[in-house]
Image 1 (cartoon, rainbow, N blue to C red):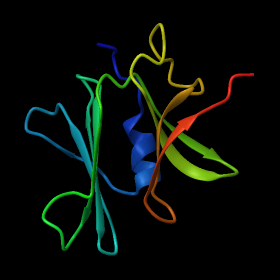
Image 2 (cartoon, rainbow, N blue to C red; image 1 turned 180 degrees about the horizontal axis):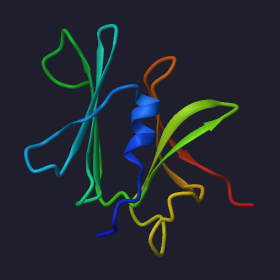
Image 3 (cartoon, one colour; image 1 turned 90 degrees about the horizontal axis):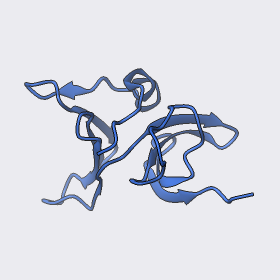
Length: 125
């Protein structure tokens, strides 16, 4: 299983919330609310797993539940499109992710101005 490369402080800056931790400090859970929507992002850094759930407050189950198992890297991007978080799909890199290189494909999470999830792939030149 790849070791997760990420900077928790970058996520605090872009998500605007401080994460809670489980009793053994093996996961980070970010809870963000926008109107009647609640986003829960949980990162198990030692397992390199990520889970994103989106809830609508009137519904008993999440409307989105997405898991990335074996995620090698997370990075925050701030460019002309805005600020968002990219999660690398498993088996993206042949070696360990360096934390700075462009992630070629995976899942992108936008929080501002609204929640938005999109799969992405950068074209190969």
